[in-house]
Image 1 (cartoon, rainbow, N blue to C red):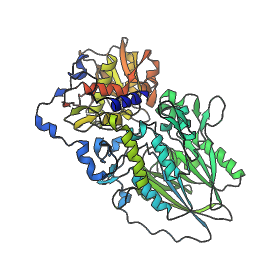
Image 2: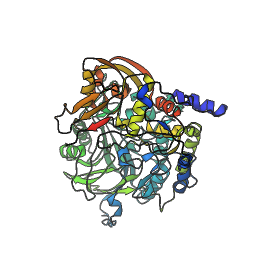
Image 3: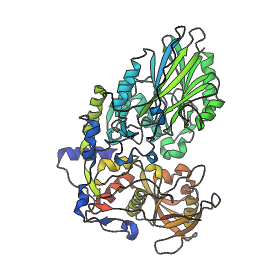
Image 4: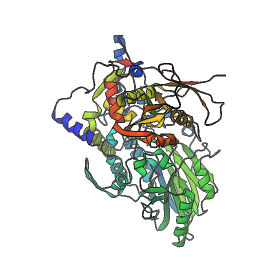
Length: 598
């Protein structure tokens, strides 16, 4: 992130200047800017800005104006990975069974999918929830109830993070986990966003050219199924035995084997991901040889269930049914959902995402057999009402915010409308259109594709800050210019419907699709801006980020493209594009994608 530090230094030493992009928005590529129009009604300039709405929910903690309220930038919407409707929060809390004094009482407090959201509040059932300082208050409160407490995490602690963590190489998120006294964790797919070297630096400590020396994590990380291709060894210890009041508990870590398809190729270079079940069972056998009978798996794999454990689904269910019965508990993650179910006598839990909830697992261990004899779980949402934020963590968050504030709060442009990633029934979103247009213009191509999973937030009406744009596209992916045949473009569009549906956002053409057609043949008509049909034998210039260009999300046809050239970073492309629009501007869904109606 060298670009960030150069900008930050210049901002601290000279006066702020406006975005370098051309303020007189000119259309360099014809149709690229056809949806951007000047808004002349001055009443539209009175839109509520993020600063206006942030004070009610944050008090005096922190300095940033972005991402403060739960519904800001659409961060409380399900299409951005957050579940706001949580029926279990309305259930009457049951009184736990009395402790059996014959057994050792142990408490496991777990989180998953934090994604560095240390300073972000979200909306749950109409009430604010989340932020690291509130999460800390809850964890410390629960920890005080049982001296035999371990704090565990199930992956994706970093990656797709807000600027307060991401611009400092996600070191703030690790430092906060350290300060909270986490005991053990595993990796998720997002820990690989910047490659194995950077992952190991965050864990083991080391020097980064931009942030300097970092001490690393104070707690062990385990991953039994991430293998160094050269050595055949795991890149991290596969398991760790922790002692609690004399009782040994073995922790095994695994991460989804889908990681190579959802991370840029450079992020997983030199490593392979072995089957989760095989990896778990191999290490359960090792633990059993050492006399360990209480075994917990930290699995960055998806699963969900009803509030009372009914209808459990997902990879976690398959894992629970196939792993050794000596496994007692599995902490899950990845799909940001609720899970609290018992499958094959194994307790499976997942507690949503973004620090808006945590799992409280209470177990009893028989000191004679050393095995877990009872286990129960509760998923707790971290509502901000009725609890004070932890002052120590709040101070840390405020310091991180202050460090990045000069660049985060720089105003790039303004809009009079909600620019959302919410896709309509055809599969198209207004923000998807805008981003694809920006990329096509920047790389001067005929066509552009954008993966919807790379759009992590919306843009609200009012001033648009650099920090808001960063929150929309936090991965800093290089753009790639390449050539593809018309047939390859059709083929890549047909790859949108596979094991799951992933609707690419597009620029430079329109198409129709038929949901009743067989997989691989759903795309019907592809039309160019001049009303001609896409020629399957002709070659076209195409823009996409490096994730897609490498075949990410299963779009393997992109790997067949030719003449690949690395371009600017996607974030810079979007910043420049928004900075070049009229102030304020509006954008609309362009009906580029049309589903055939019957």
